[in-house]
Length: 523
Image (cartoon, rainbow, N blue to C red; front, side):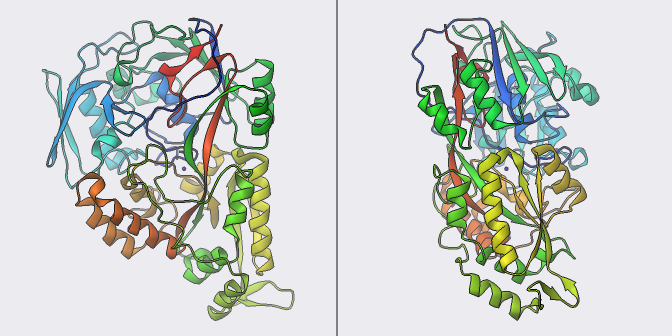
């Protein structure tokens, strides 16, 4: 999702794996020190890095916490906390860097790494990363010689990619999870030193940090002394602050993009899913009826919606794991998506008994066809305009629509808590197709990640086949599995876009977010 939940898991803005991104602009000399101000749209809430995969927290987590492995721009596994790794059947072995230390000065051990994996792997802890980054049923052990051994319960073709997404917590945090709510206990390049919820979070550099992705360190020229995450909910305000120099970085996806680009600011981008349609199939909700899901999909010109949502800078959705570097490139959407046809949509509802009354409103058995449509306010003005297009199409079909714009924190609470929604735009951004599985199948909320209560036997069967294949050998089957979700109108990505971060007075790279060790302050 661009990006998930607070106790049990989705990445609304970016559940995406670490990767390096390129940049443009700049050219000034890097100067160490100073404060790097990063405008972010929403408060991250609980700072426990393993309790939520919501994009706001996922971004801020990278500054204080490391993963065992990293991914480069080509999707290749690179060192981070582990310097060596291997996969032999159901056994994964990693060798830890002996010099990694925690922000409290203690060493980070192989036993700590294993305890992190086992914590996420325990369903009782309801971590959003179980089944996404950490395979179901895995067990881990750590030895005094610095070796971590993972034993897989089932084939996991992208297990190393997944480990690149799991933030590691130090022993003191593992012993006292409550302490992680408003402080950091990790091995990352920065450490939280001030937290003012709904205003700002200040992180101070760790000068002894040398074990970043592929050997990155904080001694590199241009590294700031501090990073301040400033909460700026309005994208236009963030754009203005970039132009005035009040902030050094912000992600801009709406109409302010053009004026920032015209101003010649530094920018860097990464491919992301921008629009993804979900339907709540909980028993008793309207979309539990396959005819309703199909009709709601047929009634909308999603190509037009994608153009509006992306402000004509994006394109149609292609696959569920589109975040660069994607492990399985391809198109699982175009040929499977039910075609736009308003007359066919009306006929679909008529045949299913959802009949229009004298006022045009449809009902079945005396119950009106009324839905709650949830979308993310962080999509900005373009999101509002695109949501209006969809709402109008559904109203023309005879559906009563309650439009509910919410920020990421509120959306996660609705999706994984109250469940009071019927259609939603939530962007699940991942780079390998196995990471999609727990969100579209299996255990439902609150015990699992399947917040839409999707049951698709064809998808499940194809996933089982693909999982038994080694790495990218199963990509064609993974894409067939995704197509089964699209053709059934369970869920489908309908818009992709290059997700762009602008910089002022600093340059950096992006992957699943801004990469901390890539920041270079400019003189």
